[in-house]
Amino acid sequence: MLTPTTDVDRAVAAIERGGLVAIPTETVYGLAADATNPAAVRRIFEVKGRPAGHPLIVHLADAAALDDWTSDVPAGARTLVALAWPGPLTVLLPRSGLVLDEITGGRASVGLRVPAHPLTRELIGRTHPLAAPSANRFGSVSPTTAAHVLADLGDRLDPDLDVILDGGACPIGVESTIVDFCVDPPQILRAGGVPPEQVEALMGADLADATGPSRASGMLESHYAPRCPVILVDTQDEADAAARDRPGSVVLGVTDDIAQYARTLYSSLRAADDAGASCVIALLPPAAGLGHAVRDRLLKAAAPRR
Image 1 (cartoon, helix red, strand yellow):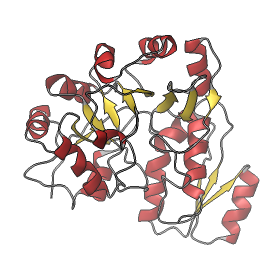
Image 2 (image 1 turned 180 degrees about the vertical axis):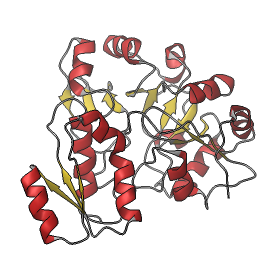
Image 3 (image 1 turned 180 degrees about the horizontal axis):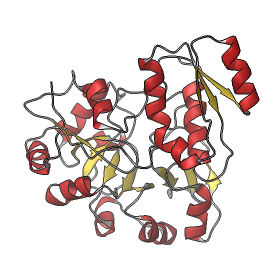
């Protein structure tokens, strides 16, 4: 069994020998491999149990690397990343010849971002850009601590090859916002750590909501789900009534601090499972700011599983 570490040297060695590293970011922990190593990238899918057609995000050291990984950067995308990177924003752009099919699921586009966590930025700067989804079993609740990664993937990672890099609890707690610049006008494919209102303000333009098939991480109808059922309500009174009717339930969302709700959402869902809760009753926050991302995650967690 792996023991999480803060030693970046060990993480560098793991990437260089083709291993996987669970990386801390400001959003959630990712399961990373050298984005130029096809065998290492394929192993991400094996460890997570992730279908091969679901694309990964390439994490770059800085915006200067953007042009190596894409064949075209529209002016709006360049403006946005200049203002939002490093940070919880992913842009979907036409891929360059450098991008592996394993990363994109054979698609013509690639998701790119520059994470803000200092340990991960050091790791990328000392190795290569890293391809990474969240460091959990496919479809389940995303990890926001190294302990979550260990609980989910500890028995699937190789202690002689892989590393869990412990950077503490993720300060935002929900994944990056994904903006698709392969369509006109650009679309927000996933609400995340940069609220839609802020994206539009930074760009000075309106964006469209996602249409068409799933083409980026987190676009499945059912995702981010704990083992117990999730019931959504709009008011505290509805939450209290639902809790009275469902012994052993856990109620989430009794706070006006939406940043705190986002930061603790995944850890709260995991804690409910660990406590053997009969269900989670979650208040939907207003569709504003980080509320967009929290609503998205809760709606997907509550969706029927197939």
